[in-house]
Length: 322
Image (cartoon, rainbow, N blue to C red; front, side, top):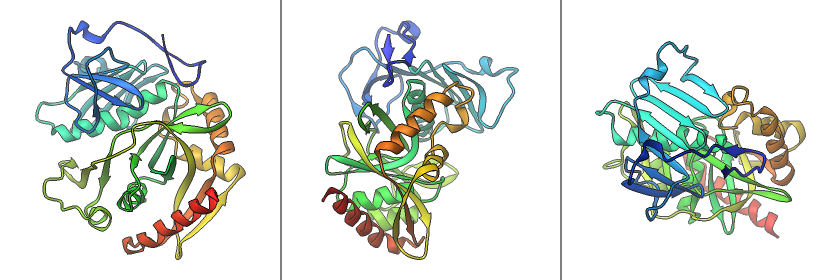
């Protein structure tokens, strides 16, 4: 039986999906071996082997018939999430082991991969018992610094600005934590890719838009693959909650304020009740707040101020290490 980071949370073991004799693509992500029927060039290639996770096309439309839609959710249980996306298709995450998709053949490959590697892997890691946060993160030395914020409020931009200063990207948008009993949790490495709006791309990574795929044909946000990343788990050293402000300031958040901030930015927050994970989640958040400082990072919205924000983070982390 496959075990999640919490020994009390198990992931169902069952025969290889579809009884396939061979899988064309093999990758590593979040410490797992992924077998896929679709290429996922963002991920690190792996030698062919038995998988922890399987990604493949399946006819999901019959499962959706007669189900009442709530947002993008059709059915959610402790072991399954069946999701629907307008003009994209259906996605099913099951048993912390399988991600299946049912999309039209004309859907751009980049759009499918954003779905699989974002919400697909995020829910799968939740099913495996991990605490998953909406966060982007970089490695500063042998520790991780992460940023949480509402969608569109600068998580990826902050990670890009720090990457431009030489700090390797750990993850963008999906932060997966592996809890340890007596210390800060480890951040499981994702893959070196950022999703950024054109102005943020130009200001941070100085990348031209030509040749960079869109996350969706109707959206200007682009996918930027980076040449390097982190390939091993590293302890989480600090979480910065991004907030607007007239000046750059870093302020500690404590007690209930810190706890609520972490609840707000949980990746699977809307699924907790349906997946019967509320009690476990509260315990995980409490553990995280006990071992990792949560800080409010106030900064002006202008991208031209990013060098000052980066300098403030560097100074803070140097003082923490002193």
